[in-house]
Image (cartoon, rainbow, N blue to C red; front, side, top):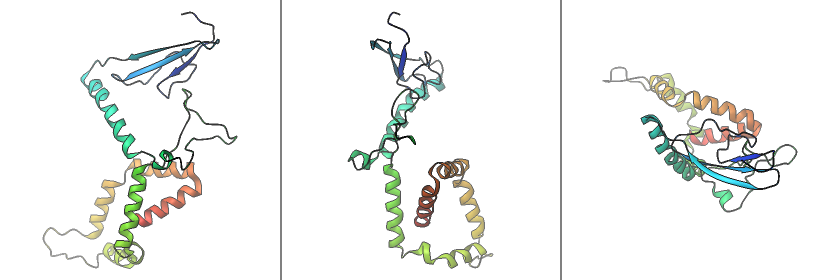
Length: 200
């Protein structure tokens, strides 16, 4: 194709390395681009799209950008938007961490997390700090002190708790907490406990 070898490749797909001539795991129906740069610094950019060959791939191509657009709203980082902190990830040596395609890695404090934390703090004080002084009452509820066995359609409070927990706490939650603790260390554990206390 001309140019001076070796070539490097700048893919729009973050998971594709700069030395890779082919990209894997791309979504059908989504536009991508690749910039080929030779040893002399000359470059050429081409855009491409993998055509969808099935109904499932067509739907995937339609909804992937919709989900991505929704994620940019709920995971928007207001602190970085107002230049309150530098969201770029650095290695232990102080260098900027990068994705395989060369893009700089960034972290964020998502808007949805801030919204939920403010909501939890507001309702904690609005309800008189019930999540701190209501331990005895909650234990009595689970023990069945307030159960009415003769009431029609009655289930015990423990059965209700078990049903609610089984429906909301899944493998994703457990794995997410494990990953957060392993990556974030004591700081992540501290904030998980604080968020849990206010969120009760």
